[in-house]
Length: 136
Image 1 (cartoon, one colour):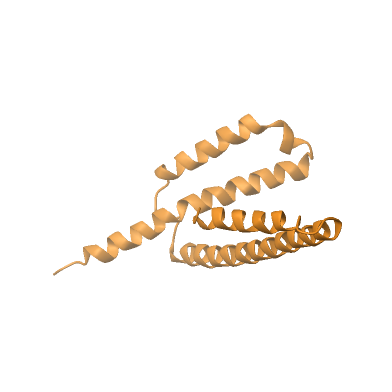
Image 2: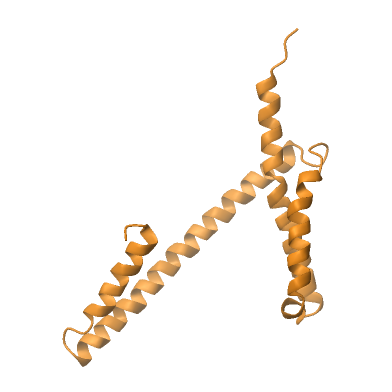
């Protein structure tokens, strides 16, 4: 009788990767509950929040894989991660369009005030885009 060691290892790797998002979600829920119960809690307790985050991040190494992290949770985490990345891409694209429109409008206003001075704003756009793209 042979056993497939590779399948078992692959499953363990997937469940271990889902522990960190779970602890981050738990931390977010705690922070949201604290902000809801006391509106100034978000400004007053930063040392405690950092300590709790470090504790949760390190504590995930000691959480057993079974029975907490079953196949159901893995699929929920995958779907949640897909939705999160999709929404973040939409937000990033919207931010880029708004930022570009704002700086192009500033360039046009500067050109109306003094001909040729709007090129600085357009050059700044290229500089930031190059920096963010890793070209510069």
